Length: 316
Image (cartoon, rainbow, N blue to C red):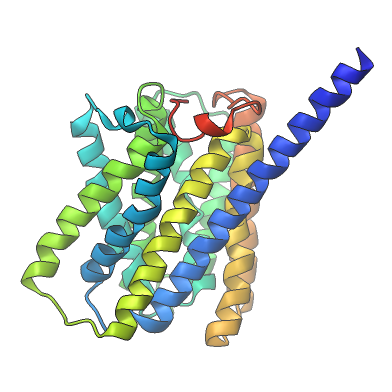
C-alpha cells in the first residue's frame, strides 16, 4: 500500500509539474508574441491584417496536433452558432489589444486585461445566476479601484486605447462564460480551431480590401508569431486539462512579470508607482476571487490525472 501511494504521489507530482510547465510556457510565449508585434508590426500594418496573418500561421501547430493524435472527428460540431459568436468576439478582442500596443507599454496593458476575473464574477452573477457573497463583491470593488489607478481616467495618461482594453476584458469574460457553458460538449481544440477559422475569415475580408504589402523580412516575423502563438495556445489548453483550476488560473499572472521583463528588454519601459500599485491591487483581487471560487467549489475542478491524449479532445 505504501508503494502504491508513493507511485501515485509521484505520478500526480510529475503530471502537475508538466501542467505547470505547459501553462508557464504558453503565457510566456504570448508575452513574447505581443512584444514582437509591438516592436516590429503594429506601426506598419492595419490591426486586422496583423490578426489575419497570426491566425493563418497559427493553423500550422494546430493541424500538426490533429494529425499526430488523429482525432479529426472532434471538429464535427453541432454548435456552430456558438463557435461563430466566440470567433467574432475573439476578433474584436484581438483588434482592441493589438491596437493598444501603439500607445501603451505592456505593463500598462496586462493589468487592465487582468480585470477579467472581476468582470467574470459580475457576469456570472447576472447571467448564470451564481450567488456572489460579500467577500467576492468586495474583491471586485477593490480590483476596479486598481484598474482606475492604472488607467487614471481624467488625466493625460488615459486614452481610448485603454478604454478599449477594458472592453477587451469584458469580451474575454464573455468568452470564458461561453466556454464554461458548453465545455461539456465541446473539446478545447474545437474552441481553438473554430475561433481561429472565424478570426481568419473576418480579418481576411478586411485584409483583402485594404492589403498593405508585406516584405519578406516581415513575412518571416508573421510566420514566427503565428506559429509560436499557436503553440502557446496549445500549451495553455493542455495545462488547463491537466491542472486543477485552483492551480491553473493563477498561472496567467506570470504575464505581468514576464511583460515587465520584456518591456524593459525590448522598449526600456519601467512601471511608475501608479502602475505598480494598481497592478498589485488587481492581481491580489483576482487571486482572492479565484481562491474563493475554488473554496466554494463554484467551478468544477479538472482531474489531475488527465492523460496527454485527452488534453485537447475531451470536454471538461
